[in-house]
Length: 125
Image (tube, rainbow, N blue to C red; front, side, top):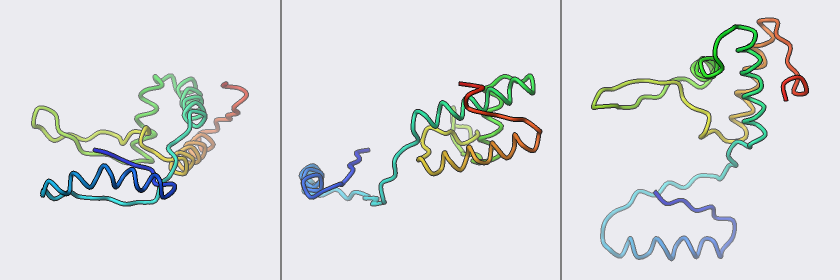
């Protein structure tokens, strides 16, 4: 799947230059056009893992299990297939944009406060 970020007319022309030959082949294509949003930042990801580590340290659980639980609670489940069998898993964080990641971290902070956990970035950096 090809993606373009269209910031100006030059970018639009480049994208159209790649799309035109495909259309001229005579096969139909599905085009999705949506507003661009920045993907989560490295800083956000580091902050989230610091929060998850604080929860794991408190609970005695491993940090990956804590991450899966937070994703299950706040992002929901996604369906997938393996060996032809339908399965579900917690939605991951790698596809989140900046706003979605901020929302997830806010929910994790509420979870932490409900358990009486204090967390500061300086404590877990």
